[in-house]
Image 1: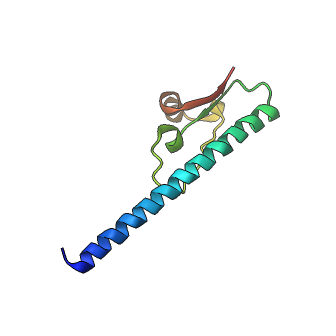
Image 2: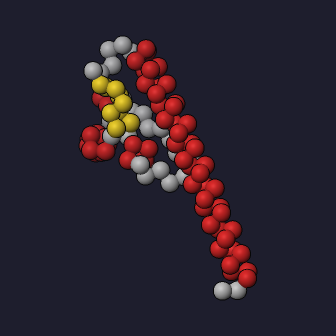
Image 3: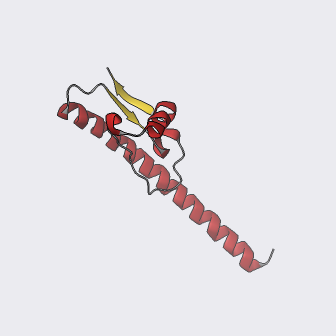
Length: 95
């Protein structure tokens, strides 16, 4: 392997490692934010019956550090989304 290709490969490996570390750190931060959101939602609406996380964070398929925390009012979501939430969602609170 030529020196320039080897250098490129090593640089690329380091970049991938840094991106993965940044993604993992953001996931940890998001998990803290989610706990705070659950408490906020429960405080705002004491009658809330359940809170479920859905999307890439719930399924473990986060690919970059740039992701959303998905929130939806179940009564207003479309059937396909509701099925996905029921199948893949992570229940955060339920009474």
